[in-house]
Image 1 (tube, rainbow, N blue to C red):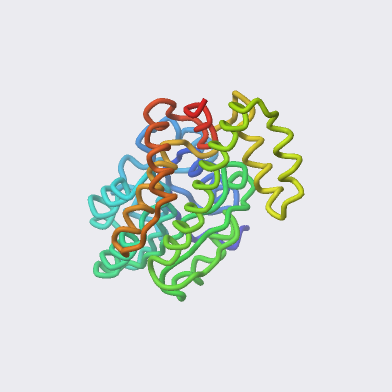
Image 2 (cartoon, rainbow, N blue to C red):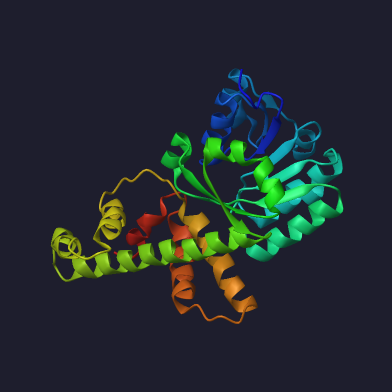
Length: 286
């Protein structure tokens, strides 16, 4: 018998990342209740024993832990403040694993605690392959005693890293996303220039491979070369994350010219080539 069998978990958001995360919890022995706006995405989990909720509020009515893995802060707020906080039992632990801006995480923690709940911001690093293997990096902000209560649960999905008070998980996720997304944007521009100058991409990679950062650069460069690349992180989500990064910079009076430039590129790409992997911005630079 799994040692977590008494814990009932609610999971909202069964998208590219959320589905494999929820499935791992179910396979680990947790009692799982799920909700997704497109109910068809929940049916495979129902066949494995999960209960399908009819609404975000219904999902909250009888669970010990309520996890959100949603598209953006607006959707998270609609699910929680709009419904779940009215239906959840006192003492419920809410864990938001979505990528949102730090001030929002602090706001949600305050709203949850005011109602007798606990709240952690716990965005993740890694793609769908890491989610399927349970190898995500989970960046956690909130009260440490709450973090320790759900540590075993989080370990089913990856490696939890406690970073401090509410909002610190989202802060670190924002910084890491800034590095990754602007790096991809710069590489795409460099690849476009490489082609326009009649140089083989392999020549540049052979040279850069000898650089200390060569392996990381090679990984992203190679994802840009094939015309068909499995989408692991959608272009429009990268644009959304860059918008949060730039807005946070403005709030903190920090200039972010590279993020601002990348936001323009990804905003254009999200309108012209949506639902493609974020490395495919090379297509609008041809």
